[in-house]
Image (cartoon, rainbow, N blue to C red):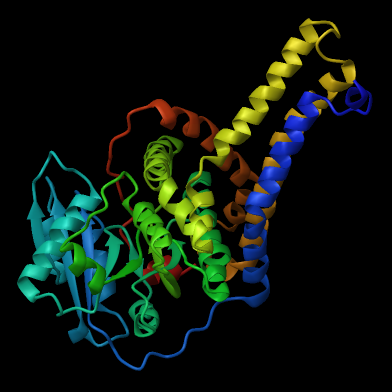
Length: 429
């Protein structure tokens, strides 16, 4: 009774706990952001040795873009005799295999319709290369998607972290169609933020990074131990990152830039992010215990990865639902279950939940745009700044996706790619 007179009611306690949890749990990401903002881009020592690499590309009906990717690899500022390109044409019904061979890649054709997806294609590709070339022919494998393009110094930059002895590494993911739509712009900013203010900061602070999508390196030692690829959830990249975090394998970051094609429509984005979200759930429920044990061993990267894959949006939605329910029930009770001040507080909490979400994502987009503006290639310059306003709405679409993915059966669906261009065309803005 005394606490109620002081304004400490159950809903106040609930909202305070939720606020403190988010503040404490994710404060470290503010530190990451400040480190990335103040210290710029990580500087790596020049490599003492040029290592040998195999590029592995899983491709399903990618005849439009595969040739440009292979050529961008072949044109690297790196000894050509130390680079080989392998393409796994996965259940293709077009000329992907032919276009890849014409561009200079070794091609494996795979037609297993029961085990569809990138992870299974990688498994076959790695296994075949080890069988044909031997276990020690390559120092590392570099994985890309068929729609990607590499800056000319990509391998030279990635070689620096390989020379330092890292077993895995990620790189700087940029967009080749930033200004195609408000959807592609939102993706572009998210990945620039991930590179500069997450992985770059992690590398500076000496903790483990995370692999996302494509543009990553894995040592031959890891591939040899599996004799293929053992990660087959809907998000095999996050699964591998989580495995590394839980087992003390530190993933590095190299400022090696590549360009990725982003979805243009909300429908295409929805399908892709539904798969990502479902994959995050798979990894969270499979590796949550391993990450907890990693935290127990003092591995901060385990904590970082746990916060990355944990369904935080579900907690946000739960908080909003609790406040909304309390508001409705309290209003119907005419003051019996909730006072007018409590009802007003619930309204304020609901408004602040979504207003604060918008503000956080707005500031994130603004600072990322300003800090990384030289990396943003767009002929429609208005789209770059309009994206600062629309980016928060894009991120809020994760709310229904997060809920639906929890119950919906999701399968791997290929993303169609149509932007066939060279690196010079992408950067000529």
